[in-house]
Length: 204
Image 1 (spheres, rainbow, N blue to C red):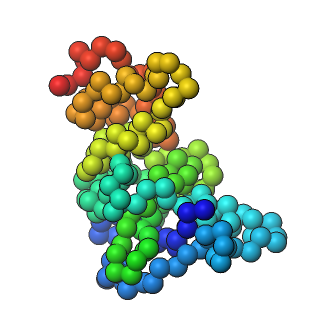
Image 2: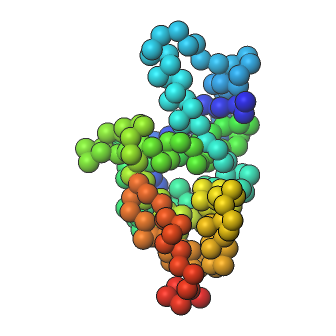
Image 3: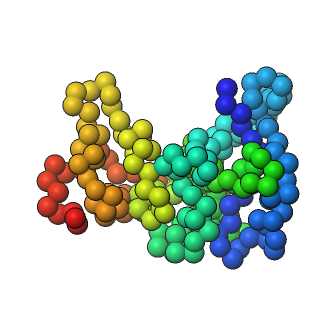
């Protein structure tokens, strides 16, 4: 089992507490669950719900690994939030990703956990985990500093089919994909069937 580390909120630029990033750099790594020496207690229903939340929040990709996830440059850029109307809590927290400390002094952005697609910020600012999410996923990917082609292939790939419908994406350039993704409504991602074999309507 890959270890799950304690996570910390991501604030929209200008909304974080004073000295927040410097404080994060001083935190020691805390492993919440690794299947051996670190694991939550699982006795009561509340314990199981809390354990489920730990797994829901656990990131799959860290920003320092350069595997196609979101990067620190994204969540610290005001334009990233403004252009996609990112849902936030009243405290300015963006609950779809988290900061993680795996090594003291290094703050990483964790992304592509289950929380990314299954968290909803209500009109009143409450966070509902496990719901149909409302992250503007497509527009967020289109605005991302580093375009996650590997992640899109992982999300849409159907290697048991010949041809793989996701192969259509391989013929699109990064600019074409960035133009296509904003069509996705919040809480959804571009359906592979929307990738037209004809590229004439997309910018080159």
